[in-house]
Image 1 (cartoon, each protein chain N blue to C red):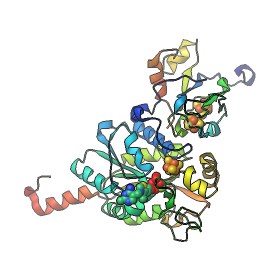
Image 2 (image 1 turned 180 degrees about the vertical axis):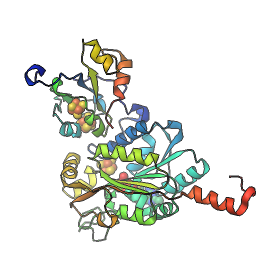
Image 3 (image 1 turned 90 degrees about the vertical axis):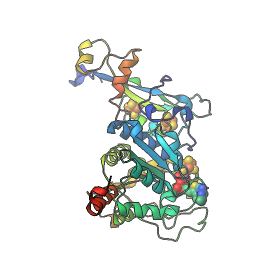
Image 4 (image 1 turned 60 degrees about the vertical axis):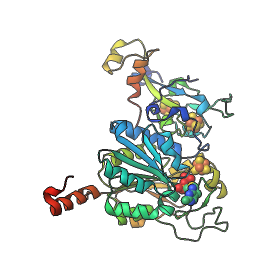
Length: 114
Length: 281
Ligand SMILES: Cc1ncc(C[n+]2csc(CCOP(=O)(O)OP(=O)(O)O)c2C)c(N)n1
Ligand code: SF4
Ligand code: SF4
Ligand code: SF4
Ligand SMILES: [Mg+2]
C-alpha cells in the first residue's frame, strides 16, 4: 500500500528474516503464526531433509520477530532494518542503517520482541 | 531467501555447538527455551550468576543446551540439588527446568516441600501430560480419558492440578501458559527471575511423537492451534478452578503473586534470634 494514497506515514523500518536453514525441522510454527503470512515452505531440502521456510513477500514482513519467538529450533528470527536513504530516519530512530554493518544488526536486534 | 547468520538474538544464551537439539519436529520444549532466552535477555542478569538445573527426561535436556552453569541431576532430584545450590551460594539465581514426570511424579515430594519452605528457586515445568523420553507412559498429569503407553484403555486416575498443588504447598508465584503463548511465557519467566521465593510456571507443550500421536490429536502445529482456540486467560483465577480436562478448555494466567519470607530469610532470622553474635551468617 503506497503511503501517498492511504495518507499513512511511510514505515521507517522494513522487516527482514534470517534463517539458519539446517536447523529447521519443518514444524510450520513460524509460517502459521506470522501475522502478515509472508512465509512459506521452501521447495528445497536442508541437509536433514526438511523444508525450511522462505520469505515470499519481502515487503510484507514487519520484522516483528514472532517467527523467532515461536521457532523451537532457533532457526529463524526477524529484525527491523531502517529503510535506506533518508539518513534522518535512521538517526532519529537511534540505529545506524544496516547494510553489511554487523554493529547495526547488533543494535537493531536489541529490539527483538519479548 | 534469508541468509545464514551467526547472531540470532537467542544465540548468546545457547550452547550453539550442540545444535540441532534432540527434540522432535513440532515438540514444544524448544519454543519455551526460546522464550526463556528472551526472559534472560530482558532480566539483564549476568549469565555467570544464573544457574540452571534439570532432572531426567526430554525437558531435562534443557540444562545441557543453555549457555549457563548447569547441572543435569538424577531423575526427580533437580529441586533438592537446586535447593543446596541456592543455600550455598545465595547470590545465584537458580532455575529448575524439567518435565511433569520428573518434577511431579518421582520428584513430587521435593516439589511440595520446596514450595512449603519457600526456597528461592524458579521452577519451570513443561507439561506434556506424559513421560516423553521413555515412550509416553502415564504421568500424574495425564488427563482422565487420555491414552498413554501404560494406559491403553485411557487414564482413569485423577491428575494433579499443578497450579493448585503449587499454591496450596506455599508457592509465592504461580502461572500457567501454553507453548502458543510465547510473549506471555517470556514475560512470566522474566517476572519469576525477579521474584524472591518459590516461583512456579507450568507450560503445556505438544509432544507430537507420543501424546498427540497416541491420542490422534495431530502434530505439534495442530496442537498449537488447539491451544490458541481453547485457552482463556484469567489472571488471579482461583487455582482450585483451573483443572485441566482431556481436550477441554485451558485456563491460563498469573494466578498467584504474593510475598512471603524465603527459607534463607526465616533461617537467618531464627539463628540470629537464638544464637545472637555466635551466628556468623
Ligand atoms: C530413577 C529413575 N527412574 C526412572 C527413569 C526413567 N525415566 C527417564 S525420563 C522419565 C520420565 C520423564 O518424564 P518427564 O519429566 O515428563 O519428561 P518429558 O520427557 O516428558 O519431557 C523416566 C521415568 C530414570 N531415568 N531414573
Ligand atoms: S518477522 Fe514477523 S512479519 Fe516477518 S516473517 Fe517473522 S513473523 Fe512474519
Ligand atoms: S518454526 Fe523454526 S523449525 Fe519450525 S518451520 Fe519455522 S524455522 Fe523451521
Ligand atoms: S518425545 Fe515428545 S517430549 Fe520428547 S522430544 Fe519428542 S516430542 Fe518432545
Ligand atoms: Mg512429560
